[in-house]
Amino acid sequence: MKEFNITNDYCKRVWNETRAQYPDQEHFLQAVGLVLESLSPAVDSIRGLKENAVLERFVEPERIIMFRVPWVDDKGVPRVNRGYRVQFSSAIGPYKGGLRFSSEVNLDILKFLGFEQVLKNSLTTLPMGGAKGGSDFDSHGKSDAEVMRFCQSFMTELYRHIGADTDVPAGDKGVGSREVAYLFGQYKRIMNQFTGVLTGKWLSFGGSLVRPEATGYGLVYFVERMLASKNDGIEGKNVIISGDGNVATFAAQKLIRLGAKVLTLSDSTGFILDEDGIDEEKLNYVMAFRAERKKIDEYVKKYQKAKFFKGERPWKVKADIALPCATQDEIYLDDAKVMVANGVKIVGEGANMPTRAEAIECFIKSGVLFAPGKASNAGGVAVSGLEMTQNSERLHWTFEKVDNKLKSIMYGIHDNSAQTAKDFGCADNYVLGANIYGFKVVADAMMAQGLV
Ligand code: NDP
Image 1 (tube, rainbow, N blue to C red):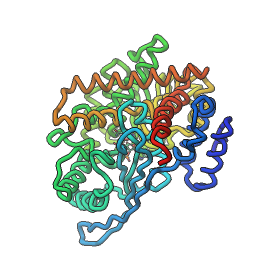
Image 2: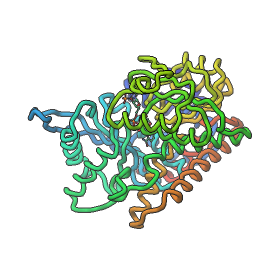
Image 3: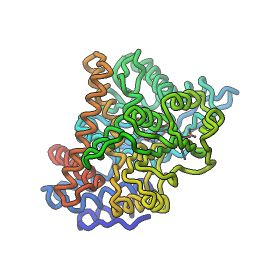
Image 4: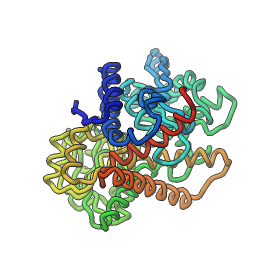
């Protein structure tokens, strides 16, 4: 792991204690190390942190729930998975964060995601605490009936720990609208209550317009604002994107509509490069075959001028902007060096922590504008927050209204992060700016509420 440049003594002590406590939680430690590094120049200027043990509490989840999830497959064979909910912080609102169903899920990954979510939700300025959960269940190759039985069993335990004013989960990798619907149905059945206990619901039962598009669109709004801060714009820019899921495809859609040229998309099998640019018609084709759970090489079967690179990621392709939108640990130091040499000017994280700490350092030192996921991919949770508001009001807002609010939230996150970075003498360091801005709000609430 990268040696973090944690210069403040209080941050250093908390870092050493966290490392000693959780030596095996590599992703969680990387997230904590990066945040403590960013907070180092700021903590002495925030009164009362040490006296109130704020940092010690900030890195420790309020509650972790772990449970077994028994279910029966289509052959009648009993199966058992592990379920989790990490309720990290309720300082500024009910716990809020997605559920991930994927074989990679473990406590380390969920603690890192929950920790990041606390700051991300704070950055949106909406009243939402931070959480994350999920299971090591992998829906690939499972029938609808199996997914439904799994979701029902998962919720049969989770329901007692969540609620519209307690903890409001949403989707994440492996948990799309199908899974959210099954989870919602089971919650409603057990509780006999129709409440906004989950977000990412279908429109017909309390979902919000723009929620599917929100993370990808929000990412592009953030990048648009970064460019504007340099008197530049998106039109005509070449963009490389990883992933072909929810975040990647809606980021691509917005970019295409704003006149950028999208060159790549990827999945876990490799990436495709289309030098002519992926237009809306081609993108619709990707969305359609992805809905049928087909892999990305399907693209080159139809568009034969495009190329498929098996088992590779798109970072060697020359471009102005790179948007990693698949998963964590996608860009390593070697990739970053190639991207810098290729003239990439902006890296915006659509996924959560796709960039390794060493690679982030390389980007920042090389003058590449780097947007950390907790800021640039906050559009999804922001619209989830707006979905909660609509559910409380028992109203549906128009697409335009939600989209405008999303844009203004993303611009706000950008401006608050940029201004904070500037205030601490580190202009353009969005990592530092986002971490300090998000933390200050949470720390303030924690101190006000006493030692809880
Ligand atoms: P999807 O499940 O829709 O898409 C995930 C994409 O990543 C797919 O293309 C998938 O390919 C690819 N992928 C998964 N694992 C790997 C791997 N090990 N190596 C290479 N590619 C991989 O997820 P989302 O688009 O919803 O989420 C993507 C990222 O964005 C995640 O990090 C998520 O936490 C983050 N995020 C999502 C939000 C949302 O609103 N959806 C909100 C904020 C963050 P394959 O199908 O082959 O597995």
